[in-house]
Length: 348
Image (cartoon, rainbow, N blue to C red; front, side):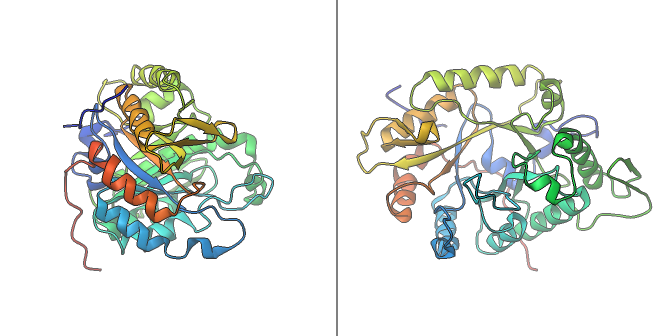
């Protein structure tokens, strides 16, 4: 495509459709039907043994917030496995989001993705509601069952049981948030007569399931507040078309057929030549493109039902600030964050 038009769970047993998040500042900044917004994945530079590559990152996140991006994303990688080759975010995602909450104003704070199979849901819920309160309601959680086998025995868990544990953790987490005095009977624990504090700012925190997380498509349709998947090939229009088929198949399984958002991501190497063609690198793991090719890709994603694109620039060649500035000036105006509820004023 050559031109892009400017985009003008109430019960435990089912996921939440859009009305459940109508007052949620983070969710509404990121998501609306038939529209696409942009987010930036952290870290902004690839960690290769030297923490200095992260120096100044928070100031750049502040710039991303000021420019009007919809979200910033942090990854959850408890242990660095050199055989896996990617240290991920390095910082603990929840601690770091709390740090970023104090240094940003509007941008949604998103996990991509919190590993629900590794941690106990009480700890997940405590961290999540704390960040949600500290940020005025800006937390959106991408969640996953985990993909690094070395981490599970380190936690004393069976890698083969991560799918069942994930589903149980999601149910437990939601009960903690939705019932002020829950009576929980779960394989992950039992209690009654106690409360989780703090409560979420708007009563709920969106849970966007990553991939299948070893669940059925039926479960994903019924339970996921949104779906985060890999994008297929991004250098040709056939990849977005395949992605669109997957999104339509998922949305057909949503019981009330209400809107639920889809998110995808790509690591990009934004070339200084705006006309540089979309070119796959590292076996398709990275896309080198000029901004015109990126705009075309984002438009193709939007047209097939993607509602948010999280871009990673940690493997790019150009200076980080240059890329952020070009994205903010020339790409973001075509895919702006949505106006919606303001984050609640916080005076902690």
